[in-house]
Length: 229
Image (tube, rainbow, N blue to C red; front, side, top):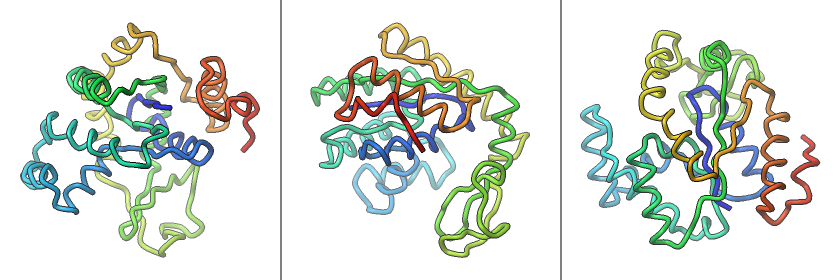
């Protein structure tokens, strides 16, 4: 099963990806994570990408695509995977199609998360990140046990600069220009399902399970429509 989660920052893609992973046991692939991993491991493509990261520039699509391709060739992706927030533009989507063609794989479904502007602001402005282990919390939806402290490692929680309202607005402008057109790209392929991301996590998961059940995707299809937390 290969699933892509698309949507604006703050729509809850990462949270839902992790919840799906818990139940279907397929890896979540987020480009930021695998990019950092490639750089940390000093792989050939990681070293090339590192130069762009250090200079504060965007890593070129050709490098990002290669890093994604290398990741989905790994053993744990044989039964499928979830792409969280990737591709980010039409060029990446077309390049990803070529990768899947070479590897004889196909996208089963693209879930497009639609969320209101106010919900996005509320979610991202309440997000906090641990400075030690990187665990992400939300002061409203998933608060830490102790205020401003990570309950995993006791590290300090901070608000990232890109989670402040003025920066969020800029991120949404970039999203609308570059990523939003992907909804039409995948709709034309008839593999797009829109999800109301203004709902809570349980409601969103129910919608996803119901769609997967309609498509007959996955080994545990009988459980999709009967999701329980």
